[in-house]
Figure 1 (cartoon, rainbow, N blue to C red):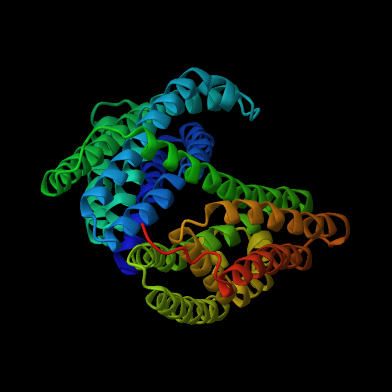
Figure 2: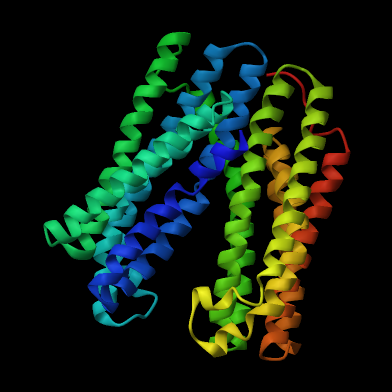
Length: 427
């Protein structure tokens, strides 16, 4: 289940990567505009991922309880919630796009380019949120392959459409946004057919149920807080890296890109855990749930050891792959070694997070997420005040994030997982 889940996880980042490659040949201004607008879009999409994470365990519980009809109905409620949120974000975002990108203080031509791209891209936000919810529905039904196929088709369509709009029709950066939006809605069309088939097969209603949408919004709200705390910690780390100097910031960006890549690989196991734990709890099988927890922890920590050793092994030669600036590459090795040492800890954290999400323990995750952020703040402050510039300061910052913040998460998640409060059996 984890392997195909990984492919679906990287769908949206791959969309942006394809846009970057094609827009990069248009010049510095369009590329800078894409970077500015892309940062805003990635923040919105990242905060809305709870639509998948709240739908998966709800569907899986009813599946485990033997009620496939109710399982599909719960997933349909998640789709309606995604559509409503997406519509609001799209309308507000379209009007606010100029002000949002203008707040970054970029050059006027870059700001105009970013505002044009972001304004058009807002029409694709409801589509991506619907994709999240539909993916969550299928994961809850223990199907991680279909989202992979849909993501692959969407990625291919995005490339072809962007080539046509950017170069064939000469629309430039705006053409890239149009192509991506069309590809996103194409994915929604495919998911609509799939969900319709499931609904007909199980005789589930396609209309929203008020109580179901409200439950999804409540659980999703807690998961939103959890995700926001993660984003806040990463932004705080970037702020501290900025204070160390421009080369340090550039090197830290490379290190965090690698962290995100490793997180995708390990988070795929967490998604498998969500689906399996939700189903086991719905079936009332606590022993199976504990077995899933143990097995996923073995895979998570074991994969972390392998990936961490690999990263440490290439830490001295990886810098030139990302940049030719010597002042940046010479800063990277100690930081990448620290990151590599922390990867097994990350595997533990991501799996435990997935297990508790699968158990529907969203409130605990939200509240402890704030505690974890509070624990990281003084560590980041200490680096800001006392860490030296250069490779040593950057390594201390990575240690504060990778061992301080992730360590705090490991403590709060591990304490909960060892207990029984999250093992709530039944649908």
